[in-house]
Image (cartoon, rainbow, N blue to C red; front, side, top):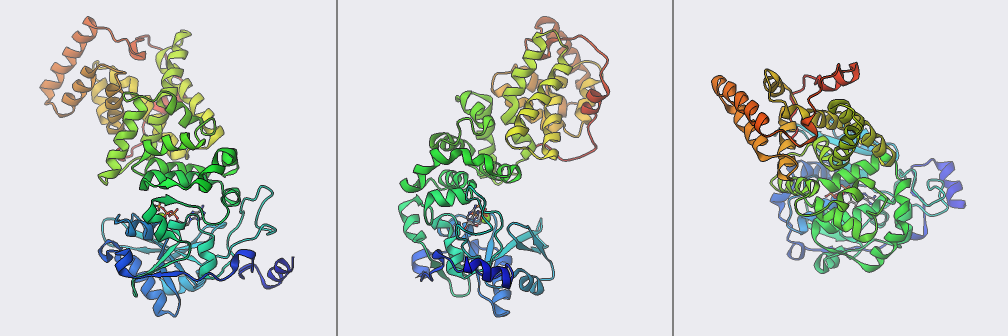
Length: 470
Ligand code: ATP
Ligand code: MG
């Protein structure tokens, strides 16, 4: 009570003394024990810590980057933690921006190289106690901009292996919660009381699973046990955060392992219907398994992944079933597909909304599918011109790999793309012959022509956008 009163008087940016704010002394880990290779560290991250330190502040590389560096993995991004406030950080870097409301951080941007690099700089945060005005009835943290000491900052991080601070200048790692030991023992262990920490932020349940899949570590028993019971709290999480975390999980390079782990800990069942559906149809040759394995391969090779394409693959099974269902009522092929798409996206929005721009990509990829089967007259030429051709074609290949379509169709498109004008004419004649000999048994078989509604026309008129699906 008194703490809250003082904080109200002094303004919200003052560290709140709390039961967990007792100063903890970190273990100082020298190079010979952590063996961090400085060549794996972004020069820009080092510039940021250096500039902050030269400005008189403390600054460390922190979080997942330190974990990955100790594991010998080159981190994909770098976070820096400092005792400078966001305003003080901004005053040191010209190209910086304050972002976030619930959790303010400063993005420092560096240009040069193929794409700009953003280093996220966050100010040490205080641990919030249970009576805090920043926590809702179920224990979820609503705002998190109370500055604190480094030891408090460490205590409010999620897992021990994510709570280490590396100073590139001294090459020491400060380890507050036994992260080094857990790395050696291959354990994902929650800092503090797991149930309370999950209540504060249910997304941590998904993070535990993601890190376990990424590192191959086990989730320590006390960290694991409460998840099954607390799983429904995931519904409390704002849709945009849930989307971000699921996307990270799917793009981690270990998507399949992560989904299996989610199911294993009790997070797959009925909580995220998309994942349920995927796992139910899972076998080595299922469309989703093939698609996710390919995604994992691409991530591991450092190739880009398009979220729209990825979600299109994950929801395709439902779209496909819905499409067939609609057609079985006598509705024509294209309207059936669009109705199925509308239904699947509406169901998905109830769980977590996929961002609009990705939904648009998904619609386009799906809508292209029947057009690949129409190899008549000028149609294949028009399809080839579509800005989404590549994504649609890659999707078609996955369908063929999952035995949903004859491989002759993808082989035909493979040839058509690179053929000369004369060869293309011949390919179209061959396709005509093939379709006469062997009428398709896929949903594309209906040849009835209907006038298209304006909505359907809009769906097949693709924006002039050169982004490819993969
Ligand atoms: P990666 O970037 O490889 O996905 P990461 O651990 O760096 O993993 P980020 O989301 O970038 O994950 O977060 C950076 C750090 O911030 C984490 O290592 C952790 O210390 C802290 N953190 C992030 N999210 C949470 C959370 N929900 N609860 C507590 N601490 C968190
Ligand atoms: Mg990170």
